[in-house]
Image 1 (cartoon, rainbow, N blue to C red):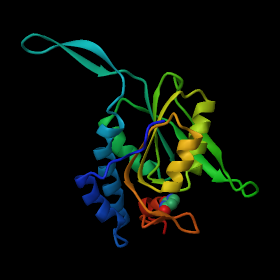
Image 2 (image 1 turned 45 degrees about the vertical axis):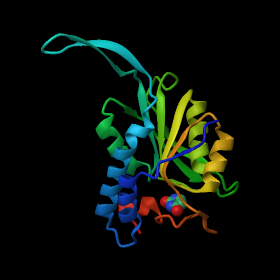
Image 3 (image 1 turned 90 degrees about the vertical axis):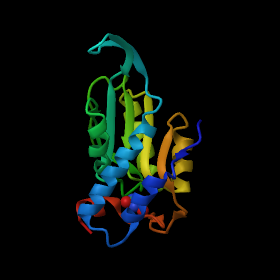
Length: 208
Ligand code: URA
């Protein structure tokens, strides 16, 4: 198990300050989430496998390398969609899986209500996207579902993580590396991250 990577990057933190602000409009919120997502891509992908190739430059042939596909991005509906565009901007060759989870009111655990995944899941590098890692329940369930369908190489990316979510996800899926922009203090009694930024889905989609 590798330790979660918490970026605390000066440029990302500057965006985070704007994103957390309660008066940030949905339009600005979406834009900041997209920009943070783009800034996180190099960290989320730094150890992706590559293969050698040669390219004819105007002068001679260069030995270089390209990403070894397939690459699948999997936003957890619905807030994960906020991160998708930034990732796809820099990784346009990626395919996209979608997973939707709803709370089972009897067991109080998240269960998938929607799962749509490209083929070649078992060969792919899969990057699971959700801006908030709160209890870790949804992230764990999404990753379990992806594994059930054959995914073997997964990583999880969020903007804000709570210690509770990191613990849960790491103990359920010790093989899955976690990348977060910031680590916050903890959860309140309603499962919101403190200080956090509120409900990311509502703020992205203007449904507050
Ligand atoms: N999901 C959110 O959008 N925000 C939180 O603080 C916790 C879970």
